[in-house]
Image (cartoon, rainbow, N blue to C red):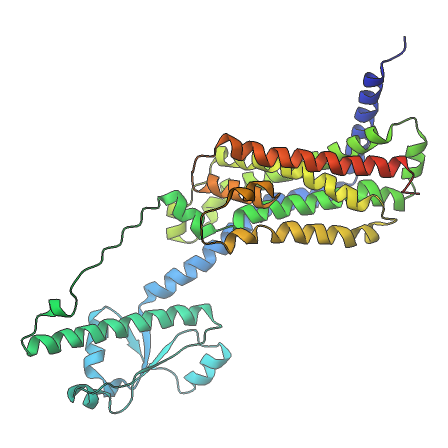
Length: 397
């Protein structure tokens, strides 16, 4: 009994898919490395972010300030100590250390006539030396600036009181700030686009290796021509290879997302640990969001690799694809206004936007789910059609 064309094509597709999956499983070293990176990079990202935040918190909580010329400003010394800050004399070569980055604290330099100018109601000049290329020095500079501003306000208030002028005339109104963002939104701001970006990068790098190996890699190993001699439709061949690559990319997206759940316990910053919450539901949402992207990028990478005579040759085109999809999410970082709707039409940018919604615990409308999925489907179909035509026309000879 003859089989129908549909069942025959389906059988061919399944056979190619199983063959590609078996080939990928045989290359266990590469597969192990890709999957291991997917699991490890989540904790590494959060550990890096939390370490930087923890260093900044500890520098602020240290409550120490370098001050040169302390003997010229006893009143300033009294004020700083009343703010529960310790005062340290800078080393003799402090300026050289600050310039070379060895010293990561700002230095307040008081001139010899500082107190005299204050008593005669002149405007003395006081300097803050810092190294803007050092994150620690910049933080210490901000602390020193706030202390001096508070000291200046206190001096003005005391001068007005002595002269019988109400302090309220200096400060006619009081501004109260209220942050309306909830804990999830603040945590998303702290982690920024790092988590979504790393998930997307993991999908891209994992799919690129598999896509090149199933097209240009087989051409280089001279195993694609014998495969084309079999009674297999080019379309079934393209679809079967794509399913194997897309499945690996989707698995990487899920594993990378799941890795952020235990990674929370490695966060070293108390503020970030109190705000950041990532559970199984968030990880599953990340995986669903990345599904259309995994399928589309797998098809695109196969399309750019199918004409390559070797993996090295295919890497040139795929590097451009990789860079493009990695740079697109940066568009949202440069936009301070509300996100426009066209974000959801751009692969990788749409996925990053949706993942940020998940991190902020914001509701996602149905059209925000469907639009990126539709775009991903169209891109996948177009790229696979190109791969099928290339195989059919023997463009890979």
